[in-house]
Amino acid sequence: MAVLLDTAVLPRRDRSEAFHAAMMSASVPSRVEHEDPDGDVHARMDFWQLGTPDLFRNEGSGIRLVRTPKHVRIGGPERLALAVQVTGSGVFGQGGIDRRVRTGELMLVDLTAPYDFAWRGLGASQAFQIDYADLGLSVETIRAAAARLPSSPMYDLVLHHLTALPGVLEALHDTPSAAMVGEASTQLVRALLTSAADDGTAPPAMADVLFSRITWYLRKNLRDPALGPAQIAAAHNVSVRYLYKLFAEHHRSLEQWLIAERLKGAARQLAEPGSRHLPIAVVAARWGFDDAGHFTRRFRRAYGMTPRELRDRVRPPA
Image (tube, rainbow, N blue to C red):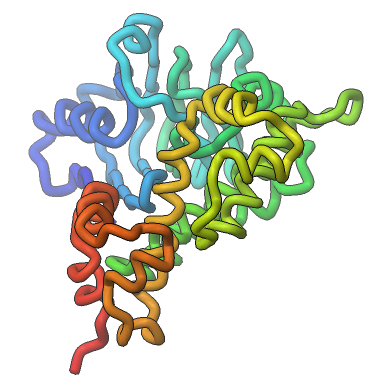
């Protein structure tokens, strides 16, 4: 966990500016308005990196966050946030729809579009932020789900999961398991949105269903050295051209997706106590990397450390 901000250690005159800087580092550009800018502005922001996704918690005095069309044009990562209101109640508006978010309720925020969110008095919100590319759902599915979250049978499960995440992550601090929790959380959110988008009057988006089947198949066969576009397409009765088109529609590259998933598998095996006797080159080969140097470069780019550094980090003390 990283503490991005704790105004308790700052002079009052510096708190508003510090709050804005911390908020911009944790999320996307927006305008910050404090309920009482000349009074006791106070806040604490905590941040957990879970591989690609992250968890961000903000607790403090009344605020309003406004992301305008100008902020959207400035840019920012293509992400969404699934947030739980931990304390107090807020008002959230996006896409022309305003709603009150009470304690213990979820809200879905498209971080690529304008929105308005505020609470009065003491409040706290906790957001799981995910790249659209990692979620693998169409914009249409996500927009349909946003208005129907409570209808999903996954709602209570995901709510409990996100609420409990900080405590779990503290116990897993500085271990490879934190990234695995991020992957599992992403899948839970994906299931929530897919089920919420299905209102029972029409079949789920076929492209999303097919994409889910294909990625499940790929994860089951990542170690197969023959796994390639032709085999994948044939197994799902589609053309190779359509396979590439499907991944492009979900903002993915098939080859880069395979490399990323194989790196995750190799990282998990490197961290396993039962695999410590295996040379790194052997682990790399088992996950489809015949060139150990190429594997190490890819691994460092993805995880900020070499395979050996990961293995040393999780090695128990002598």
